[in-house]
Image (cartoon, rainbow, N blue to C red; front, side):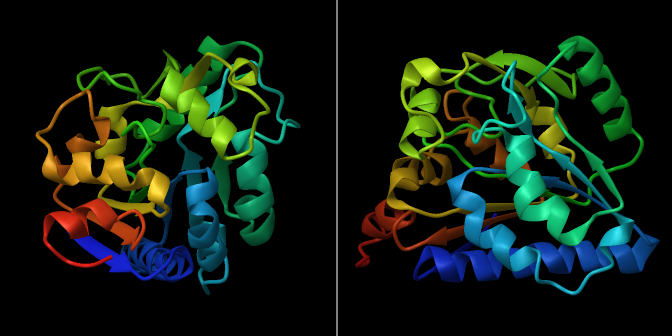
Length: 249
């Protein structure tokens, strides 16, 4: 685990975005193509803004993303397909894009997506951490053992409150109860993992992740088992870690 602490979310985004670009560039140079996972949500705004400005051969990049709500239209402002299309896909035009589709025949959609995922390793996974410690929509207690690539999960109360707090929904009752999520083992199969986690609302999750034992009740702790995990924080999200070390924020 490598921890990089920036002064604010803007600087965090610049550092993380460039680190992701470097990993993509290395994969392109090594084998002529790169496969990536992208996270969504308010925490990824600055990182994606930096990433899309990087000079890369995006035509040889394949993108997967982590999750999507079940039965939420792609036109809804909270749709992660909409989010990524507007902030990434329509900007850089990657060679291939595999969206998580929670509409229609969900079982069939998962099967198609899983087969595409299995074709080759993921070079870099951009994995956020939720306020409840989740990675993707693997809320606590997360399933660390399934060999599925994507599965339907039930969202817990704190996860749903986070979506309201970020402004994607008006109330908790508006947030879908179920979503399709990439599983923990699938995430960990990435050759390199980069986590962009700014903002004070993530400070507790970061403290629990970094200092706690590996536990499905803090799903992000499993990232500490990965041989190449890079965690990018700002002074707000790192505040509880800094206080533990006796440093000032």
